Length: 296
Image (cartoon, rainbow, N blue to C red; front, side):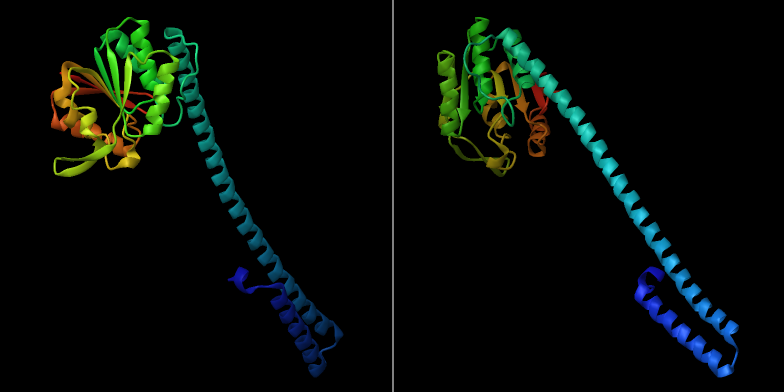
């Protein structure tokens, strides 16, 4: 109330009115100079007291706002500090994984980017390790890119009698992948197939996935890496991979599903496991999280 109604202008008017009233009362009653002056001084004192109270309340309000702003600032600083620590830890982990990749598979030409939504170095290292230990004869990738090259380099480096088939709906991106494969002289080990998206009906729902003509000849898939299509192409864009390619998998097939940090992608995993209880899964604590599925 005081902050709302007590203003300097209001107090000045009230004090002026008080002084005039006190002076008029003193003259009318012939009270004398001292009582009249005392009454007039009381008005000025009350006015000053009101202004002092208002100033104190205003100052307290500002201090309260400052405290709230300071609290918000400290919380922001703590969040930034936590995010920075997490980012530094992730960056160090990716650099360490990339260093390991280069040690295992030394190269002498330009390499594709591994940041953003490309396969991260930690995932690439996990994939290369699977290739080295399981020595797959046929690797199929849903989506092409850095992983296509690194997997081909692993096949060549360790003399594994296998090949890679990568499906990609984007002809520009698939062309860039072929260029990298050519520069590293592994086109004999990896093939990138242009596979425009088409509609498939699964479990009463319609999905956009790679054209059937691009994969219907595949059989005996030992390693299936699902890193496409992108989430932007449709709801649960990667769900069709297992229902459509299940019959093409070998009895010892391993499946890797990337980008589980994306909620839409994360929903795919339990649907796969519910539809095919013959698979078990392991979550890899990678930058963008991935799941490895194997037959039980």
